[in-house]
Image 1 (cartoon, rainbow, N blue to C red):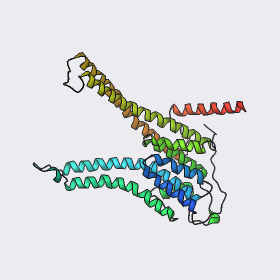
Image 2: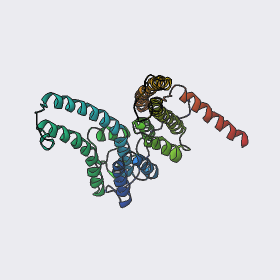
Image 3: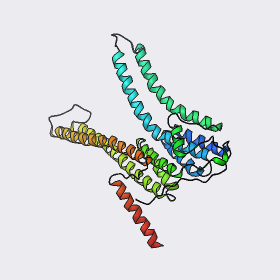
Image 4: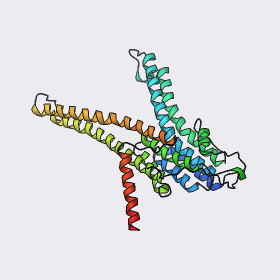
Amino acid sequence: MTGCYAKTRPTKLHSMNTTPTTEDRIWAVLAHLSALSFGIGILLPIVGWSDQRRKSNFASFQSLQALGYQSLGFTVWVLSYLVIIILASIILLVTFRPVEGRSPDTILSPAMIFFLIIIFGFFLLYLVLPIVAAVACALGKDFRYPLMGDRLARYLSYASSQKPEEQPWLDEDHEVRWVTAMGHFSILILIWGMLAPLTAWMLQGRHNLFLKFQSIQTLLYQAITTIIYFIGGFMYLFGFLFLLVGMGGMGKPNLNSSTGMFGIVVFAVALIVSFVLILLVPLMHILGQWAGYRVLKGDDYRYPVVGGLVEKLISKNSTSKEESV
């Protein structure tokens, strides 16, 4: 899709109040609090950004930051959570010493309590940060998430401390790239992650061909990944149920019968297919993360097969419209 999108870096200055308006604060608060809806709220920051861009730098930045927290931040949080669970489980197994005759009500050892604090504490931390962000924005403060906030501000050329007459709009090219990249990163959010590229495409696709292409191919790629995931789970369930039926249902198993042997074979095949498909899903997730990274670095990334297919569909649709006119 070479030449479909020209990088722009706005230099026009605008006058705006140093104190965010009530509307600015409301959009910022809603964008941050949408993280509490566990995935489905990822569309709200994009809606806020689409509505407030070129109206309020404060609301636009906070919406984009909230979008990053729900997509890129969720990715980092999931990976960190897995590492913490693994490490905490290892510590628990090493330090836990079962005592013969111990009653169930005394099984909570200090190691087990520490394990539970780590698991639930880290999860609560993920939910607390958006609440803190929402409260700060409601008070008109320029909130920044740890690690991500300042980096994003530099990426978007956003500086709230500038005088009103010195404030340019956010970097348009980087705004679009951030939104499209977060669509790629949201692949880890099962089903609801598709709302990010879908919302971006519906609200801004007609204004920007780069965003339209990236959003459509991301949506299609995530849909394929989700379908593969559910097919893998269905294959395992199908094989297991077939095995139960072949072995005589819930009664006494009969492995010597022809139906019992056939059930075992079907289950084995279904298990292998399910394993291959489910193993493929994390690899597709990794590719989605890589796509988001490449978009942020300035590339017009295309997924294998999917990217070329989407490009042909868009080109064909554009040609049809031109001919009809």
